[in-house]
Each structure stands twice: as structure tokens, then as C-alpha cells.
Image (tube, rainbow, N blue to C red; front, side):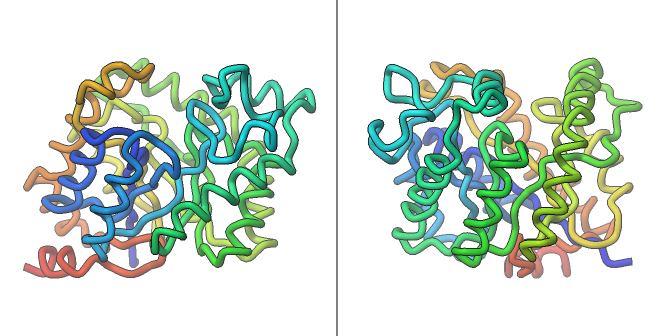
Length: 297
């Protein structure tokens, strides 16, 4: 049974401290892939450093909430608030989608601009996903798969965890259960998204990590790895270091990011994947060269 795992870091470009943690998790650990904001505070820093790490898979972390658009406000009025930024949270955004206040044409224009921004820097994108998983809403997912086909990007994440492991969690078990419940509520959307991707001939790997966002532990990771199915799975992570910029942002993921750097670079974690014979890859199915050497040793 061949089991392959993409270990992906979300939020590349959010702050320099987050970038530092992500690149440490790649340079010294098991990370194979990262999702890059096109227009965040440290996007430029991230692009320059990612270029020097040619084995790191890089995708676009598409943004429609909690961020700054690339296009001028006059071109995307249904996506922004009075201050010219996206809506602060996924909740008002999804509500606006459901009541018809979000223009899918404007969504496509803005997301196209975000993809173009990264590609213009010479970065070959391996996948698409979205900040706060807002692309899980099927009409927006359809836009994203269309863009993946247009730009020949092989993978789009469906952020649905089929069987999240919630029993035996020793770190914030109620948080894990709450996040698992939120995951379960998106099952109807996930079914439509998988169908849409199949029709568009876009790959959608198995997905894990949503229930344990911000509360990873050695025990949880060990149980997850032991239960991985055959085929390709994406493990979503959020490594990073807390800097002054991150501390000022409205995010619950602060110290948890540094904890994840530690987990992803721990020698025991590296040995875990070797013992379980997990092949670590990028979304384009290629393996990072230095990881192949490390796991063969």
C-alpha cells in the first residue's frame, strides 16, 4: 500500500515571523509545500526566499476575506467593505454569498489577479486553496477549478476531512470536537466540490488537519499518520513564529504556530514518517530531493 503525504503550510507571506517558521519547517523538518498569500504583508519576502528553495511546492492561498484585494475597489465593489478591504470574517462573506450580494464575476477577476501576481514573479504554482476555506462554497469552488484549468494548476484543495480522529486527543479535546463538527457541516458542499473537480479533471487529494488546527500534538500526529489511507493525502499545518506584526493581527493562532514548527522539525517526527513508510511529496507529485535522501538514510 503506497501512502504519499503532502505536508502543507498555510499562510506563507502573512508576516516575516510566519515565513521564518515555515522555511525552518521546510529546511530542517518534514514540510514539503506551502500556500502563499498574493497580497499580504510579507508576500515579497516569501517569494524571494521560496525561489531559493526549488524543491518546496508553492500554491496560491486565495483570499476573499481578512485581507487586502489586488484589484481597485471600483472593480470589485461586492467583495469589499468601506475601508477598501475584504470582509473581516468568513461568516459575513458566506452570508453575503447566500443572499446574492457577492458577484461571482468579481470573484473570478480578483482571484485571477492574485494568481497572476504570483506567477508574474516566476513561481510555478502546484495547487490552489483559500484563506479560511471560503472556496468550499460550491459556486466559488467552481470558479477556482475553472482557474486551475486555465492556468494548468493540477490540484485544488477540498477542505473536508472525511474521518477526523477526535478520540484520545490530549490537547484541547473540546476544540478538536468543535472543529470536527464544523468540518462535518460542510459535507454537502464537499460532495458538490469533488464532483465539480472530477468534471474539470482537477485532482483533489485526501485532506486532513482541519479538526486539529491550532492544537496539534505528538499523539494526534502519530494517530493520524498510522491511519493514513493509500494514495495522496494533504496534511494542513500552520507553522510560524510570533513577531510583533502577527501579535497585532486578529488571529487565534499565535504560540500554536511555533509549537507546530517544533513538531515538524522534531527528530521523532522525521523518524515517524520513515517507520510508517510515508512518501513525502509536493502537490505536483514530485518529492523534495533532500527529503528523499534524509528518509533513505
